[in-house]
Length: 223
Ligand SMILES: *Cc1c(COP(=O)(O)O)cnc(C)c1O
Image (cartoon, rainbow, N blue to C red; front, side, top):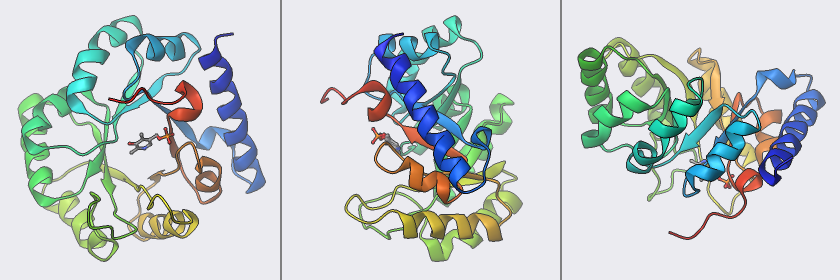
């Protein structure tokens, strides 16, 4: 087995164990392999090991890397997990299956326009800035309910979940439970939370997607 294949198996085992510890089924959690900044060859190795769901944080990088990988594995699913500029909305709607970083009205409007133009409706998650960090993307927790409602009612967007990136130095668990509460009261079934350092805690708090890069692909080459 390749190194990447072995690490994938280990991450899957850890997800299953964390899920079982709180009475959840392992198949309630989808592992997103975050291949950002890694080569197409690394992503291909994960595909060869059976991995089918991937995350990228930059539209342009994904546009360069993924069309060829998709030809090899037409059933691969791609999630956008990084900030989306409105001028890249067309490329993002064309390429991604899920866009996890919807966080402002202007972007909601741009996505609605592209959905109509392209006849494609990728699933959308609203990103919540649970730590209320000045430099971080995401809608503030106090504004989340109104924003989700406007995405649904004003723009008719297929919002199915929430995503958060807790502050780097903080205990992530209060952030995971805050996000779960917002999802619950808005009837959203999907929760994208947890990365290499904390995905087991996220699974215990109800994550349905964990975004794991380093634990699968190793350290990212500096860019
Ligand atoms: C890079 C990234 C990840 C993966 O981080 P690791 O610590 O390498 O697992 C997850 N989510 C987002 C939004 C990222 O940008």
